[in-house]
Image (cartoon, rainbow, N blue to C red; front, side):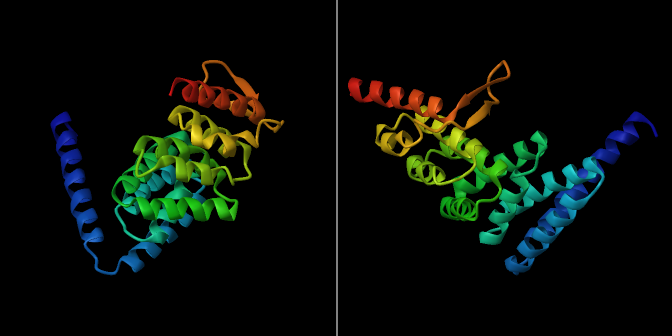
Length: 214
């Protein structure tokens, strides 16, 4: 196959993909579509071929974000819980889009995940999505994330609240100042860690400085 033929094949494949996606999303039975996507996600997660699994999950994240209803957003969080960073990036962007367009659906799905005590890898990503959307009031949902049990989720949430700079969150953060659980700081240039207590203490200093300057 020549280079020209290869390029034309890519255009043809992209055109077919867009047509198939439009047909799939045009259904009036959104409940059936959400169930289909959920089942396909379960199958993709079980695949032994990692590349195939990740390819399917990335596409399913995009489709789930375009499907209204609780089941589709719950499914998106399942995909965001994947260990592969490439999958989480796509799923995180999809969740952000849902939060911009249907914030209540996204918030309720997050609250269900916190209550279930599951999907903690996903929930550790959520504070940064909430912070980016920044509406209607990110502090409300972030404070609810402090009810999670996983230290990774708590660490991300404390850091996000500090970045948000909301002194009203001080009491919610203060209860972790003596928490000895240690978490790895993934966003640092070096492989470092800190306790939840240390992160909470740093956040409280931010809140104090903001209150003093108000």
